[in-house]
Image 1 (cartoon, helix red, strand yellow):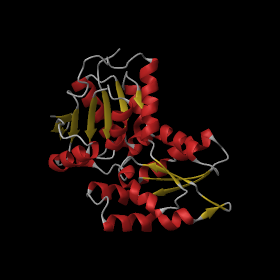
Image 2: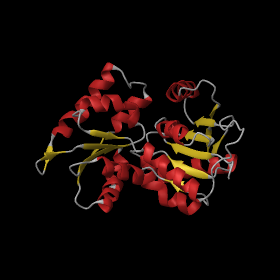
Image 3: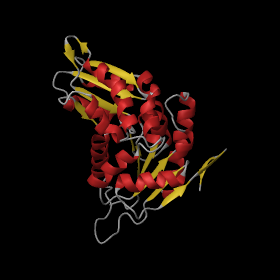
Image 4: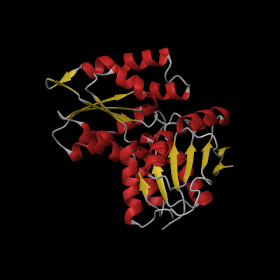
Length: 281
């Protein structure tokens, strides 16, 4: 057993989609989350900045909370900084892209898979490479949709304007045929995008599988915990009394969204400050 918590990092609110899945699959595991809203979006940033910011979040959680594993709940950070995190940290680091690729493979029936993500994730070809490594017969199309991140961070999910923007961005693209077939699977290659899942599903054919990688990423995390005999003691413990959710951005808006998304009113939410040395309370 290992009663330390698990850390989760993201450029903003999107990583909370992974946390929500973790609360379902790993209900006994404490949660420490950092959303770097002050410096989002990460997608257009140079790789060196993404790596720097990601390492700062990881370093804060390790030093402050002595986490036993780090879940990178951000596709851009996974694409650009996963090797650096694994080299730097002595704990398991779980990325979201391999999980998303596996989930996409499991969902497709005609081997035509589309992926949407940030500019950085798409340009890195991380999803393409992971998917092809799993099945070289796949037909893969990718599209960068950084505006979807802004929709989420601007609280436009579920609004008529948000629905219109999502529809116009992906409907015709998803209807296009490649090798005579339309894609039957759409992988959400940004953890912000599942917050728009209703709008996305409405914009594509009803037979298209819209894949959220969060479930598979937490499955992989659980398997690592099992192999390491690192699950939290499940006896007579309030596992979430020590949970903390941090943001580098607007704490009022972050608090409102986090409580609503996780359906929990009694959460400890704190603001992080950025200085030359990294992040601090």
